[in-house]
Image 1 (tube, rainbow, N blue to C red):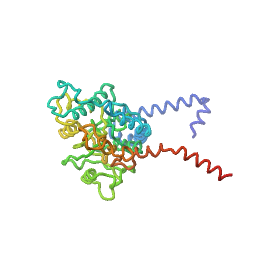
Image 2 (image 1 turned 120 degrees about the vertical axis):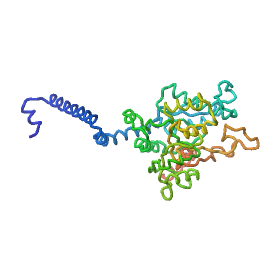
Image 3 (image 1 turned 90 degrees about the vertical axis):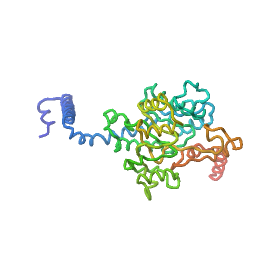
Image 4 (image 1 turned 180 degrees about the vertical axis):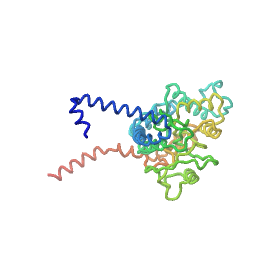
Length: 376
């Protein structure tokens, strides 16, 4: 018998019917939730119904202006306005909003402010201080996560799609040591079980005792074999990706020996641990080296994405580095950004940017005139 007909015969009006229906749904939901909590064995069943939609919604935050992180920061020396112009232009073309963290002149750091045991040349010390300032900024602003970039980088023009796919992988992370919290399931696109997520390393190595810890996934935006540097091809092969799978698969693995800090994400707890181990307790070497040593000591937890998602943009000459004293015999830059290039990317956002903004205004006028004449 149709329940609606029974209600109609009983004289119940539509508003009451809707109220009764809503009450039934609420009661069912509460009962189901209580059932799920009281019987953990059914938790996975309920999650299997809810999770796909929820995970997809979380991954979609990768399309926002911060790629799903609380903030995107980039470090640049105050005098490198050329790089700041480039980063602002690149970010605007990619729909990303970035916040500048000033680089630091190592000579300006008082001897009393240098971490214990830090016997480093001025430029390297300044590099460390700039990254430490970024970590402090994350803590001061109570950001849950932040993406930290350097100012001489490039990324793929499909960066939002790449981070969308990464989010899905990290939400389905088979490598994590603890189960995700309810907060992570509803609000953390990349999870929160890590301190540092390496996304722009210049080389890496896996923990030799844990090469079985790897998550391999398809990525249509992964670079081809010829566009991937040998150091990453070797890293991928050591973790099980070789042959025809190169150029199709990307890897997520526990971070162990990354070098360079072109692009990495941190959680708030990660910022705290980095400041503890790479400032409060001392500094053993360049910031990227000490981050790797701290990972190897097991005092910080992280993941590495291979091939990396951020790459160095190189123009040749003195402009390519702020960390070393320029060689007076070396050109400032051979042909500048016109001849610049990056590796380990399928489709350079910098190259795409030049193409997308290209204009031939007077040529357009000439073509317009010629077309008008042809039509008449």
